[in-house]
Length: 281
Ligand SMILES: C[S@@+](CC[C@H](N)C(=O)[O-])C[C@H]1O[C@@H](n2cnc3c(N)ncnc32)[C@H](O)[C@@H]1O
Image (tube, rainbow, N blue to C red; front, side, top):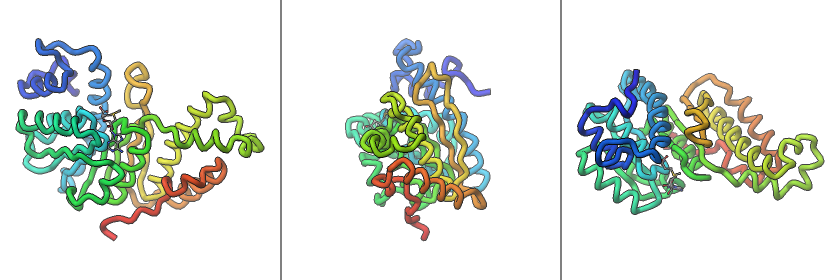
């Protein structure tokens, strides 16, 4: 049974939670942070077995977290798993330099040696020489908009064994549906998104469906589940992809192509395309 945050007694973990402003200076839980913490704690429970499996396989434990923000997730994973191990590294990728500097300060204070915070756009990360050639686990918790897709591309380039995503808002597919509405209205399927609120919701749903198909078409087994109750976050869809041979790659590739054509998303073909070159090729 995992400890709830109230039960965490280790002085360094308490220090970390205070530094992340999850706990107030007198050790109470900051209500505003409680929801974020619940999400991260829940997410850790999904990530830990993947890390343990990699460890059993003697695979390098390199984890890259995209759109890291204040790096709640990276710090908590490090604290719970990496802190007491001699191997492995946690990388946080974030486009805001101020957040990177804060994370680096905190890392020094806590002496979390095997962490790096990189001031990078996720889209550029797959070309960065900073990462090791083997990155076995890639995470993106609420990485805004297309950053989730760029995180997927990074993971595919690295041939990562596991990809863990909780997508954030995504407006691009909805905007294409809106743009093409007149044309798409000829199909009864347009009823799925005829009303504006449905356009937004369906656009977001379709985006995640296309992401899952792309992952499957790229040789991953995908599970989609809820992260926490909706009371903790509206952006609650958890996608876990595991590198897997013998899956439904061909069928998913066909269906991906079908959906892109059916919903007039050919402009976005490249984003959802499976043609990502891997470093190992
Ligand atoms: C909603 S916050 C989530 C932060 C963190 N993952 C969490 O859940 O606490 C999204 C973060 O992604 C960063 N971000 C958005 N687009 C990015 C991009 N293309 N490259 C790198 N970081 C990005 C933002 O600056 C922001 O800090």
